[in-house]
Amino acid sequence: MNKLAIGTAQFGMDYGIGSSPGKVSINEVKKILEYAKSINIDMLDTASAYGKSEKTLGELNVDEFKIVTKTRHFNVLKITDDDVNLLNRDFDNSLKDLKLDSLYGLLIHNADDLMKPGASKIIEFIQNLKKTKKIKKIGVSIYENKHLSFALENFDIDLVQLPLNIFDRRLIDNGMLKLLGQKGLEVHARSIFLQGLILMENSSRPRKFDRWDNLWKSWSEWLNDNKISPLEASIRYAMSFSEISKVLVGIDSVNQLIEIMNAASGVLPPIPNELYTDDSLLLNPSNWDLI
Image 1 (spheres, rainbow, N blue to C red):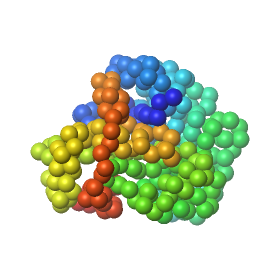
Image 2 (image 1 turned 135 degrees about the vertical axis):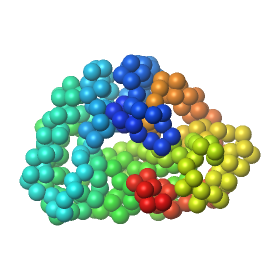
Image 3 (image 1 turned 120 degrees about the vertical axis):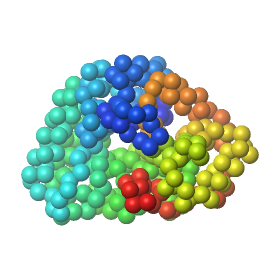
């Protein structure tokens, strides 16, 4: 089993600040999946919100993979039976598009939905999917510590998807990653490249990120001093945690997946404190429009 898992947002839409324009062609997706199987990558992460990602995967026969999908965002103040009906329809459509009878996991995509009145309706519906073996694991995708704490205190979950990268150690410093390991929960790390921002050359990075100039300067100096690439540093860092079950990587091409696999092996030099930040304006891509 390979610790890498493939994020499939690029298979259905233009995604990521550093990705190639447009979604990945179905022929390239086929090559990616064939290579992934050859190196024992066994998990794909998708969502009905990822454009045509699930339809594309369904056309290519993914029954050998563990599939994790996600709920929609509910733009309401209170969760009602109508919202659960939408969730039921979405899940049925996911199975139909993926051409599968069951999935490995279903994640609450927007953890804020768990903090709304009526959220128990969502959990009850997903628990029923688990009881009827439509899914194996119930999960939540989080960005903030408050969401993770609330989910752990109020709901019975099996799987947590969380942000982790070489700049972001908030969930490490506050002990939450260690706690998840102690509880035996399955943990998937995402945003390890911060949607490609971490991998970009200084000249290519959008100017609005210049406000973190000291961080970028420290990053470049550390990479140069240790003769390591941004890709090597980022993937090795994410792979180094025993509590992490899967490391999600978004892929544009089979060559990119090969590069990531090659970069994953090797030594990770000690990381200076100058490379850590807790600034959610940078670490949460949903905040980038505020910059």
